[in-house]
Length: 118
Image 1 (cartoon, rainbow, N blue to C red):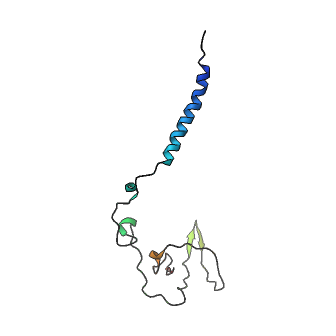
Image 2 (tube, helix red, strand yellow; image 1 turned 30 degrees about the vertical axis):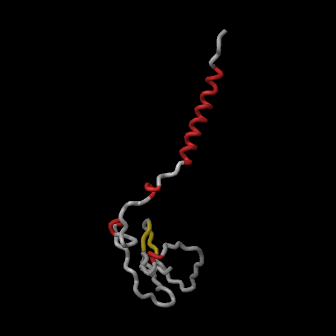
Image 3 (cartoon, rainbow, N blue to C red; image 1 turned 90 degrees about the horizontal axis):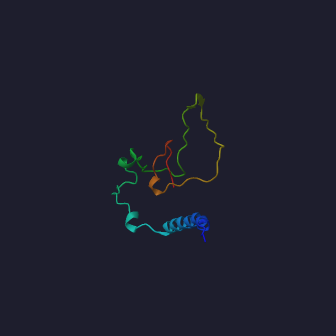
């Protein structure tokens, strides 16, 4: 009488796949240690430290006029050899969603010189 090993070999890949799946699933349920989640780097007094970002934050504008910011027309610029000239259109109104950067940006100048107002 000879015992065939073929049925056992057919089950081996399925068992290996189940074992690997069980290990991966168990790894997903573990939680990181609380101490590992704490950022131990010292915080700067500023929101945007020059040492961290390479540039200083713009100064806060002390006084903002009532009724909004200021209108500012951009300078001509060139993209891929073509020049663009911004125009002023008093009738232009765009309504939609905007990004909110938080209180740290309130009163600071934006890239185009406008005052960020939360």
